[in-house]
Image (cartoon, rainbow, N blue to C red; front, side, top):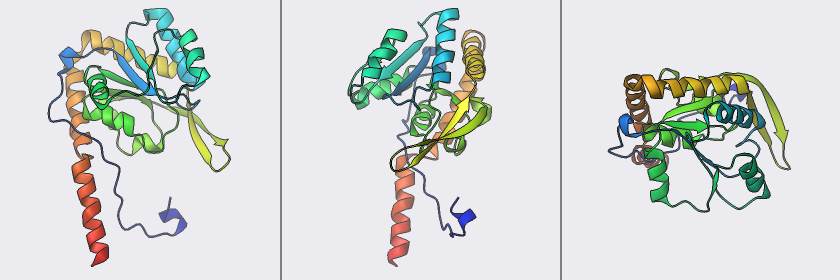
Amino acid sequence: MFELKGVHVYKVIPHGVEVPEKVKPVTEKNGFYYRAYYLERKYPKYGLQALEEYVKRYGSQDFDIWLVGEPFKQDYFLQARFPFMKVKNPLTPDELRQLYDSHLFFLNLSDAEGFGLQPLEAMAYGEIVITAYYPAIREYLPVDCNIAVGVKRYWLEKLDYEYILHAEYSPEDYLKAMEIAREMALHDRETLAKWSECNRKVASKYDYRLVYQAFVELIEQIRR
């Protein structure tokens, strides 16, 4: 975007994530995991429709979804609609690591991300990401190792100080993606193991120790 506006981009340094040395094998992982505080873009209606239809067909035992952050009245509306959702503030770092490391799939319901760090963190733990395929996600997500859903259209939400770009996806497409994941968990763990290894390899490029070392080197170059 900067280059399109005529601004020279010298170097791009992404955000970094923690990449653990070891994670649980795919054979020891199950289900869908998602964590977000309540915002409409984190729980868009089309994602919730897909979630609701999946529960009708297969039950809610596959899901581990956490509502975190400041308590909102919408948390209780969501819990009334989806009783399996949990509310806790905060989750400790050890709890977060355990959640990432114990699930097969990261269910990225969000239709907008500034950096998209949660899916990248999930990849670092070998999770397979199910997500709409929009710009922040396209920065790092290998489509051959995850389940990406197409974007139907983009729309802007105007806030007091900025616009949020939403990537609207089809609830039917997202439901199909979850069903593909379910079938693979039941019948094709071998492929999931390869995808998990692929995601770990990609995420390792964003290890915070490498990323922030590059930032330090850039600062030193500027000082010289």
